[in-house]
Image 1 (tube, rainbow, N blue to C red):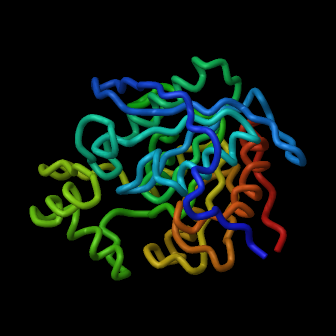
Image 2 (cartoon, rainbow, N blue to C red):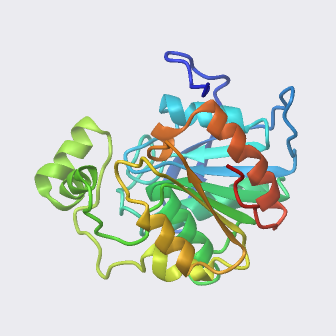
Length: 280
Protein backbone atom coordinates (compact mmCIF):
# COMPACT_ATOMS: atom_id res chain seq x y z
CA UNK A 1 0.00 0.00 0.00
CA UNK A 2 1.28 3.47 -0.89
CA UNK A 3 1.76 5.75 2.09
CA UNK A 4 0.15 9.14 1.63
CA UNK A 5 0.41 12.36 3.57
CA UNK A 6 -2.27 12.70 6.23
CA UNK A 7 -4.87 15.36 5.64
CA UNK A 8 -4.72 18.19 8.14
CA UNK A 9 -1.33 17.08 9.43
CA UNK A 10 1.27 19.90 9.39
CA UNK A 11 3.79 17.16 8.55
CA UNK A 12 6.43 18.01 11.08
CA UNK A 13 8.36 21.08 12.01
CA UNK A 14 8.17 24.39 10.21
CA UNK A 15 11.58 25.38 8.94
CA UNK A 16 13.62 28.29 10.15
CA UNK A 17 12.47 31.33 8.14
CA UNK A 18 15.14 32.93 5.99
CA UNK A 19 15.26 35.54 3.24
CA UNK A 20 17.02 35.14 -0.09
CA UNK A 21 18.22 38.00 -2.26
CA UNK A 22 18.43 37.36 -6.00
CA UNK A 23 21.01 38.82 -8.37
CA UNK A 24 18.36 41.16 -9.78
CA UNK A 25 17.47 42.47 -6.34
CA UNK A 26 14.32 40.58 -5.38
CA UNK A 27 13.66 39.30 -1.89
CA UNK A 28 12.34 35.75 -1.62
CA UNK A 29 10.72 34.06 1.35
CA UNK A 30 12.51 30.83 2.21
CA UNK A 31 12.87 28.22 4.93
CA UNK A 32 15.71 26.02 6.11
CA UNK A 33 15.00 22.61 7.60
CA UNK A 34 18.08 21.17 9.25
CA UNK A 35 19.08 17.58 8.73
CA UNK A 36 16.88 15.44 11.00
CA UNK A 37 17.90 11.75 11.15
CA UNK A 38 15.08 9.21 11.12
CA UNK A 39 15.13 5.55 12.11
CA UNK A 40 15.69 3.30 9.13
CA UNK A 41 16.96 6.09 6.86
CA UNK A 42 20.59 6.53 5.85
CA UNK A 43 21.04 10.26 5.42
CA UNK A 44 23.91 12.60 4.66
CA UNK A 45 24.39 15.58 7.01
CA UNK A 46 26.64 17.20 4.41
CA UNK A 47 23.88 17.21 1.78
CA UNK A 48 21.76 20.28 1.11
CA UNK A 49 18.53 19.81 -0.84
CA UNK A 50 17.03 22.81 -2.65
CA UNK A 51 13.32 22.35 -3.40
CA UNK A 52 11.76 24.36 -6.24
CA UNK A 53 7.96 24.19 -6.40
CA UNK A 54 5.73 24.23 -9.46
CA UNK A 55 3.74 27.09 -10.97
CA UNK A 56 1.19 28.51 -8.45
CA UNK A 57 2.92 26.57 -5.65
CA UNK A 58 4.47 27.86 -2.43
CA UNK A 59 6.64 26.53 0.36
CA UNK A 60 3.75 26.50 2.83
CA UNK A 61 1.43 24.34 0.70
CA UNK A 62 0.76 21.25 2.85
CA UNK A 63 2.03 18.63 0.39
CA UNK A 64 5.15 20.62 -0.47
CA UNK A 65 5.93 21.14 3.21
CA UNK A 66 5.38 17.43 3.86
CA UNK A 67 7.88 16.58 1.11
CA UNK A 68 10.45 19.00 2.59
CA UNK A 69 9.98 17.61 6.08
CA UNK A 70 10.35 14.00 4.99
CA UNK A 71 13.42 14.77 2.87
CA UNK A 72 15.14 16.36 5.87
CA UNK A 73 15.95 12.81 6.99
CA UNK A 74 18.27 12.60 3.97
CA UNK A 75 19.88 16.05 4.25
CA UNK A 76 19.18 19.66 5.11
CA UNK A 77 16.43 21.26 3.04
CA UNK A 78 16.05 24.81 1.74
CA UNK A 79 12.70 25.63 0.15
CA UNK A 80 11.46 28.99 -1.10
CA UNK A 81 8.66 30.83 -2.86
CA UNK A 82 9.49 31.64 -6.47
CA UNK A 83 9.17 35.29 -7.47
CA UNK A 84 5.53 36.26 -7.82
CA UNK A 85 4.47 33.39 -5.56
CA UNK A 86 3.52 33.32 -1.90
CA UNK A 87 5.35 35.93 0.17
CA UNK A 88 8.19 36.54 -2.29
CA UNK A 89 8.56 39.77 -4.21
CA UNK A 90 8.32 40.45 -7.91
CA UNK A 91 6.23 38.78 -10.58
CA UNK A 92 6.48 35.35 -12.13
CA UNK A 93 8.20 35.11 -15.50
CA UNK A 94 7.15 31.45 -15.75
CA UNK A 95 10.60 29.91 -16.07
CA UNK A 96 12.89 32.69 -17.27
CA UNK A 97 14.23 34.91 -14.47
CA UNK A 98 13.40 32.15 -11.98
CA UNK A 99 16.87 30.73 -12.65
CA UNK A 100 18.11 33.56 -10.42
CA UNK A 101 15.81 32.36 -7.63
CA UNK A 102 17.24 28.85 -7.71
CA UNK A 103 20.74 30.30 -7.96
CA UNK A 104 20.18 32.33 -4.78
CA UNK A 105 18.84 29.25 -2.98
CA UNK A 106 21.84 27.12 -3.96
CA UNK A 107 24.24 29.85 -2.84
CA UNK A 108 22.47 30.17 0.52
CA UNK A 109 22.52 26.40 1.02
CA UNK A 110 26.28 26.34 0.56
CA UNK A 111 26.61 29.28 2.96
CA UNK A 112 24.87 27.14 5.59
CA UNK A 113 27.83 24.77 5.33
CA UNK A 114 26.48 21.97 3.15
CA UNK A 115 29.29 20.49 1.08
CA UNK A 116 26.99 18.93 -1.51
CA UNK A 117 23.85 20.54 -2.97
CA UNK A 118 21.16 18.95 -5.15
CA UNK A 119 18.31 20.89 -6.74
CA UNK A 120 14.89 19.21 -6.94
CA UNK A 121 12.39 20.92 -9.20
CA UNK A 122 8.71 20.14 -9.68
CA UNK A 123 6.99 20.97 -12.99
CA UNK A 124 7.98 24.60 -13.73
CA UNK A 125 10.58 24.25 -10.99
CA UNK A 126 12.04 21.30 -12.87
CA UNK A 127 12.44 23.30 -16.06
CA UNK A 128 14.05 26.08 -14.03
CA UNK A 129 16.41 23.64 -12.29
CA UNK A 130 17.61 22.41 -15.70
CA UNK A 131 18.14 25.95 -16.95
CA UNK A 132 19.88 27.12 -13.75
CA UNK A 133 22.45 24.32 -13.99
CA UNK A 134 22.88 24.68 -17.75
CA UNK A 135 23.43 28.46 -17.60
CA UNK A 136 26.22 28.29 -15.02
CA UNK A 137 28.91 30.82 -15.72
CA UNK A 138 26.61 32.67 -18.13
CA UNK A 139 23.61 33.78 -16.13
CA UNK A 140 23.95 31.78 -12.93
CA UNK A 141 26.98 31.32 -10.71
CA UNK A 142 26.08 28.80 -7.99
CA UNK A 143 25.94 25.42 -9.73
CA UNK A 144 24.52 22.41 -7.88
CA UNK A 145 26.22 19.03 -7.62
CA UNK A 146 23.15 17.23 -8.96
CA UNK A 147 19.75 18.01 -10.49
CA UNK A 148 16.39 16.25 -10.22
CA UNK A 149 13.26 17.13 -12.15
CA UNK A 150 9.78 15.77 -11.53
CA UNK A 151 7.20 16.35 -14.28
CA UNK A 152 9.32 18.91 -16.14
CA UNK A 153 8.18 20.40 -19.43
CA UNK A 154 10.53 19.88 -22.37
CA UNK A 155 9.65 22.97 -24.40
CA UNK A 156 7.48 26.03 -24.06
CA UNK A 157 3.90 26.55 -25.29
CA UNK A 158 2.82 22.96 -24.75
CA UNK A 159 -0.98 22.81 -25.08
CA UNK A 160 -1.42 19.05 -25.54
CA UNK A 161 -3.75 18.66 -22.56
CA UNK A 162 -6.70 20.53 -21.07
CA UNK A 163 -4.80 21.56 -17.91
CA UNK A 164 -1.98 23.03 -20.02
CA UNK A 165 -4.46 24.97 -22.15
CA UNK A 166 -5.95 26.43 -18.97
CA UNK A 167 -2.46 27.29 -17.71
CA UNK A 168 -1.72 29.17 -20.91
CA UNK A 169 -4.95 31.12 -20.52
CA UNK A 170 -3.86 32.09 -17.00
CA UNK A 171 -0.44 33.24 -18.17
CA UNK A 172 -1.18 34.85 -21.53
CA UNK A 173 -4.45 36.72 -21.03
CA UNK A 174 -5.32 39.69 -18.84
CA UNK A 175 -8.34 37.91 -17.37
CA UNK A 176 -6.25 34.80 -16.71
CA UNK A 177 -3.55 36.77 -14.89
CA UNK A 178 -6.20 38.49 -12.80
CA UNK A 179 -7.67 35.09 -11.91
CA UNK A 180 -4.23 33.74 -10.95
CA UNK A 181 -3.54 36.78 -8.77
CA UNK A 182 -6.86 36.82 -6.94
CA UNK A 183 -7.59 33.12 -6.52
CA UNK A 184 -4.21 31.39 -6.78
CA UNK A 185 -1.99 33.99 -5.14
CA UNK A 186 0.34 34.08 -8.16
CA UNK A 187 1.40 37.38 -9.67
CA UNK A 188 2.39 36.94 -13.33
CA UNK A 189 4.41 39.48 -15.30
CA UNK A 190 2.20 41.08 -17.94
CA UNK A 191 4.91 41.82 -20.51
CA UNK A 192 5.63 38.19 -21.37
CA UNK A 193 8.87 36.89 -22.86
CA UNK A 194 10.94 39.03 -25.20
CA UNK A 195 12.71 37.05 -26.47
CA UNK A 196 11.61 33.60 -25.33
CA UNK A 197 14.19 31.91 -23.08
CA UNK A 198 15.95 28.84 -24.41
CA UNK A 199 13.61 25.88 -23.77
CA UNK A 200 14.73 23.02 -21.54
CA UNK A 201 15.17 20.47 -24.33
CA UNK A 202 17.58 22.79 -26.17
CA UNK A 203 19.72 23.49 -23.13
CA UNK A 204 19.56 20.28 -21.08
CA UNK A 205 22.70 18.94 -22.77
CA UNK A 206 24.67 21.68 -21.03
CA UNK A 207 23.78 20.36 -17.57
CA UNK A 208 26.53 17.71 -17.97
CA UNK A 209 28.83 16.80 -16.31
CA UNK A 210 26.47 17.51 -13.40
CA UNK A 211 24.41 14.30 -12.95
CA UNK A 212 20.74 14.62 -13.84
CA UNK A 213 17.74 12.52 -12.82
CA UNK A 214 14.54 12.99 -14.82
CA UNK A 215 11.34 11.63 -13.23
CA UNK A 216 7.98 11.50 -14.98
CA UNK A 217 4.72 9.73 -14.32
CA UNK A 218 2.74 7.72 -16.83
CA UNK A 219 -0.50 9.25 -15.48
CA UNK A 220 0.50 12.91 -15.69
CA UNK A 221 -2.64 14.92 -16.59
CA UNK A 222 -0.60 18.01 -17.55
CA UNK A 223 2.46 16.85 -19.47
CA UNK A 224 2.56 13.85 -21.77
CA UNK A 225 5.37 11.31 -21.56
CA UNK A 226 7.14 12.70 -24.61
CA UNK A 227 8.29 15.64 -22.47
CA UNK A 228 10.50 13.29 -20.46
CA UNK A 229 11.54 11.33 -23.56
CA UNK A 230 12.63 14.50 -25.35
CA UNK A 231 14.62 15.75 -22.36
CA UNK A 232 16.30 12.38 -21.95
CA UNK A 233 17.20 12.20 -25.65
CA UNK A 234 18.71 15.69 -25.59
CA UNK A 235 20.61 15.29 -22.30
CA UNK A 236 24.21 14.14 -22.07
CA UNK A 237 25.64 11.65 -19.62
CA UNK A 238 25.41 11.30 -16.71
CA UNK A 239 21.60 11.20 -16.97
CA UNK A 240 18.91 8.77 -15.82
CA UNK A 241 15.19 8.62 -16.59
CA UNK A 242 12.77 7.14 -14.09
CA UNK A 243 9.18 6.50 -15.16
CA UNK A 244 6.93 6.12 -12.14
CA UNK A 245 3.87 3.95 -12.90
CA UNK A 246 0.63 5.52 -11.71
CA UNK A 247 2.32 8.80 -10.84
CA UNK A 248 0.47 12.00 -11.68
CA UNK A 249 1.98 15.46 -11.70
CA UNK A 250 4.70 17.10 -9.63
CA UNK A 251 4.03 17.81 -5.94
CA UNK A 252 0.41 16.73 -6.10
CA UNK A 253 1.43 13.26 -7.22
CA UNK A 254 3.91 12.67 -4.40
CA UNK A 255 3.40 10.21 -1.57
CA UNK A 256 5.56 9.23 1.39
CA UNK A 257 6.75 6.16 -0.52
CA UNK A 258 7.79 8.26 -3.50
CA UNK A 259 9.73 10.63 -1.25
CA UNK A 260 11.58 7.71 0.30
CA UNK A 261 12.43 6.41 -3.17
CA UNK A 262 13.75 9.83 -4.12
CA UNK A 263 15.79 10.47 -0.96
CA UNK A 264 18.62 7.95 -1.52
CA UNK A 265 19.00 9.13 -5.12
CA UNK A 266 19.71 12.65 -3.85
CA UNK A 267 22.62 11.36 -1.79
CA UNK A 268 24.06 9.63 -4.89
CA UNK A 269 23.64 12.74 -7.05
CA UNK A 270 25.20 14.95 -4.40
CA UNK A 271 28.37 12.90 -4.73
CA UNK A 272 28.46 13.60 -8.45
CA UNK A 273 27.44 10.07 -9.41
CA UNK A 274 24.84 8.98 -11.97
CA UNK A 275 21.73 7.44 -10.41
CA UNK A 276 21.12 3.80 -11.44
CA UNK A 277 18.16 2.86 -13.58
CA UNK A 278 15.01 2.20 -11.59
CA UNK A 279 14.32 -1.46 -10.81
CA UNK A 280 10.64 -2.22 -11.46
